[in-house]
Structure formats: structure tokens, C-alpha cells
Amino acid sequence: MNLQGKTALITGAGSGIGQAIAVLFARECADIVVNDIDLPSAEATAARIRRIGRNVICVVADVSDAGQVGAMVSRVIEEMGGIHILVNNAGMLEYGSMIEEQTTERWDKVVAANLRSVYLCCRRVGQWMASHGGGKIVNIASIAGISAAPFSPGYGAAKAGAINLTRSLAADWGKYKINVNCIAPGIVDTPLTRRTITAWSNPEKIKQNIPLGRFGEVEDIASAALFLVSDEAGYITGITLPVDGGWLAYNNP
Ligand code: NAD
Image 1 (tube, rainbow, N blue to C red):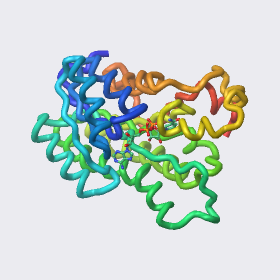
Image 2 (tube, rainbow, N blue to C red; image 1 turned 60 degrees about the vertical axis):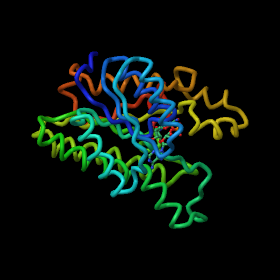
Image 3 (tube, rainbow, N blue to C red; image 1 turned 30 degrees about the vertical axis):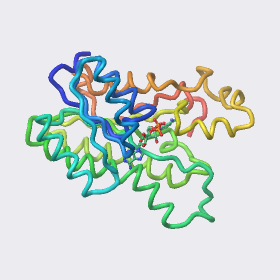
Image 4 (cartoon, helix red, strand yellow; image 1 turned 180 degrees about the horizontal axis):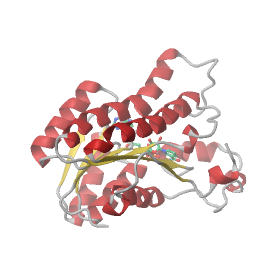
């Protein structure tokens, strides 16, 4: 799946799933924009991409902030000439929240990180794509946006919002040749989930609820993202693809 001639902006690409997507897209010959809120993480990913031999820039921005998203996208268009692929991957988990104890500020922060960020980046990049022949957008949601999200109600609500925003944008932007799709990862071992996984008294028991018997690897999610941004997926838009080892099939929501 060759991405030669394409520039891909991946948010939250300094770690975990976003980093794996950036590296895989670079291996498929895309030029990469590494966004993260954390500069050292972004630079570490950029260094890996330079070693692959692709053009890369790092843009530090909080993608839940409209001003920072606007400045980031303007800079990328100026320096890279455009954005053909957008992966809205940045997000934060709030495991351990009970809604009856949660502050409104905490709710707003989690929803902003996981949903407003998707809206802001889609809006700004979509404007450019709409007037330049189209593009591909992939939003990284979660199985927590499809089934219940115990102890993470804001996270689950925000991910469900990202799933339906995907559908609405796909419907509105088909006329611009913009494909908008979503991935719902299951449990993937990354810095985001490591604390939670190690806090579980028996992670092996959790794996018994996963038909494929293991947690996901970041590469599992990256491969699905690569397919969705490829020409081979040109007639796919508005879907949410679970990449969960069979979790949703087995733990039927
Ligand atoms: P991670 O914590 O390893 O990486 C997330 C990256 O996003 C970090 O580098 C962080 O600095 C960055 N980031 C966070 N908020 C940001 C912001 N406002 N602006 C810019 N950058 C920001 O996490 P991960 O597990 O790789 O998660 C990536 C995505 O996948 C998230 O949206 C997450 O909700 C989703 N997801 C992960 C899992 C899992 O099990 N790991 C499961 C389902 C969904």
C-alpha cells in the first residue's frame, strides 16, 4: 500500500498507537507530520522516521485547543504543501472515575482531549482537503465508545461521540471525496493502558474474554489504519472498524 506523494498528519504520535501509525506510514513512503503535546516524545518518533528516510516535521500542539490546531495546520500546509491524510489519534484515559464523584472540570478535560480534538482537527484539515481534491481521515475511538465504559464514563461518551462524528462527516464530505473512517481498538498495551493493566489483579483472566487470547499490539492498529487510508479502501467511508481480538463479538454490547 504505497503512500508515496502523500503527507500524513498524525496527532498524539509521540507514543503508543500514534507512533506505530507514523512509522508504518513512513515505511509506506508517506511524509509525516508528528503532532504531540510533548516535544521529547514527538522528537523521538521523528528520529525514527528520519532513519527510514522520509521527510518529517514535529509540531507541538494541544489538539483540544482551537487556536493551537489552527496554527498547527497553517504551518503544516505552508511547510509541507498540504495534508492528504489525517489520523486523529491523540487522547487520554480517565480510568478510575465514578461519575458521582467526578468534577465538571475533569469531565470537560476528558471530553475535550478525546472528542473536541477530533472535531477541531477534522474541521480545519477538512477545509483544506475539500478545496484540494479530497483526502482520508481516520479517527481512533475505542471499544469503550461502543460498549459500556465502567470507571471511564467521560472517556466512553467522548469515544461514542467520535464514532458518530465519523458517520456524520462521511455523509457530509463524500461530495468532496473525503473518506472519514474510525477504528475502535480493544485493549492495547501502551503507556496509556499500562498502569491500568498492571493494576488489574489478574490480567490473564481479562485475556479469557478476548477470543484471540492476547492484548493488542500497536502494530495491529497501525495496519488497520494503513488499510483505511489506502487507495484499496477507496469505497469505504463512515465505518467504525473494531480491532479488538474479537472482544466486541464475544462481549456483545
Ligand atoms: P499513549 O498515551 O501511549 O499516546 C497518546 C499520545 O497522545 C501521547 O504521546 C500524548 O502526549 C498525546 N496527547 C494526549 N493528549 C494530547 C493533546 N491534547 N494534544 C496532543 N497530543 C496529545 O496512548 P495510546 O494507547 O497510544 O492511545 C492512542 C489512542 O488510542 C487514544 O485516542 C486512545 O484513547 C486510543 N485507544 C487506546 C487503547 C489502548 O488500549 N491503548 C484502546 C482504545 C483506544
